[in-house]
Image 1 (tube, rainbow, N blue to C red):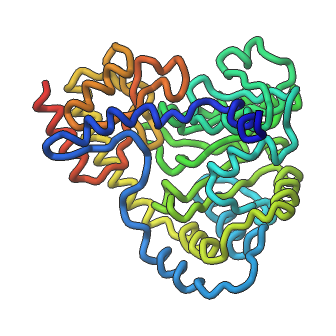
Image 2: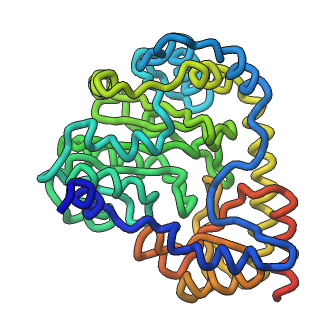
Length: 369
């Protein structure tokens, strides 16, 4: 067996390949495809961010792996201002998109065979991919927190969550942190949707009401992809435990993993401006409201969905049947079993499509009733 084959055998099948047929079916609809399957931003990147990127285009030297002091200070200020979290700017590390770090994190932290990584029962698939790539065992939190391994190496949490939109209250987050600290387990918190709470206010795992006065054994991951329509920039950062951030910095220096200097300049501007986020939230709120009403009228129940950029919906049937029926009306959604077996009767509906495409989906659903 080749080395490449050995690596690929550790990983689950890439789920989106399974949706290709229904994408083609939906694309054949007379008015074209309405793609609600992926949470890809379609709205404009803020003008000030674009200008900062262009102004920093003269960058002949290597960027700092640690990030510029201005970027680290901007991230720390944003965390204080928007999340009520206090971190030293030295404990902020920019990364090349949050997915890159999430996928590589177990390896970068030295985890491997013999280590267990706990992930949510319904989860962003990259948590599992990263663990399996490192050779770790993967357990689901629904069973593990009650009766699983006594000392897992790490536990992932995601609030607001992909795919369900579930937003964990402070009491739940505090219990996870306490549970992990009793066992010497790292808490890894994906908070890329923290700016997008709808029915409740999301809270960071680094907030003192959750973790007290210490960030020991906790890492939080933040992305500008959804917050600032910067998915194409691959702009994110990690913060939390001082020792862990320093360890990641050392490893990334050795691997040459650096966020390009123009991207760092753009991130600094984006993190310093809240107005564009407020405007984007209102766009998403309108789209969410329209889609939620339309899917409910079409007989779908909406579960959780109090945060993030998704509706977690069920028609009381196998998820692929819902995918097929919606595709016949030119609407593409993600099957719930992409995210875990317990999602087998749900679909994930992203409200990141344009206003025009959201209106088209609502009209098609109304006509289909």
